[in-house]
Image (cartoon, helix red, strand yellow):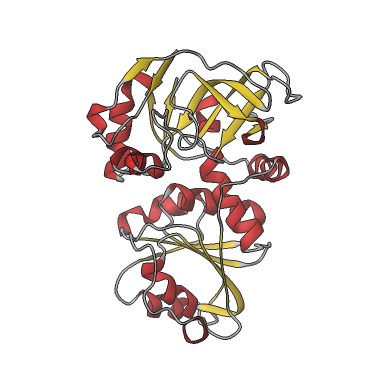
Length: 322
């Protein structure tokens, strides 16, 4: 089968499609015929430097998500030909992932789906929408009527969160670094858009003096303190992203830095369940949601797809058809 295999850090242009054997099925695992997959920033980081780390199984086929059909169900109880998505749980790091025509995956990573979406649209869903869904539903406990602030609204998770939050019935304020992207965010569903940068806290509170009831923090540590200060009493801040490039806070004092009565949580997307996937897909169908797709490539154009992802200038998900 055709696959992309990494053994050491490389540039996007050095990524090549090669031939490797189709994996042999074993108990507890499912062989999935990969129809398409989305490109994620974590896969760019894997290619750039993380693959050199000793905890990465090498050689490794990257890819933390995919959509496809069951080729061999083994002892999973699934049916051959069943439409599935797969994500996380070690894909593309502990064992071979989705940058291939077939992927042998633990049954716990593979989820049956019923959806009217095309393959391309569904390929934009698994990791991105699950991260947004888990952040909103599990961590933020978002309800109809809540005021939600999404910091980093033009990111793939931000766009998904806006769409899902509107399906729940929340009022959504989204942020962007570029005023030019404000119209696009409103087209996706944002009720209001505020530009990031100096004076953001003041600009937000001028419009919403009571603060936000729920905040999805996708920029991360760089703006977390500000997000905590603009959250209303008994509101919740969920840090899910690290778009700002800061991976931690120095001298963070929870007692002083988290306002009294404001709650700080996070969301880690590594262990989805079938019930969560069903809830996510149900909300997508209920809201008539169509994922924002930035570009489509075939597997042989994987280098071009990674160059685009590395530049981080696209709006929406990059999808690869195998």
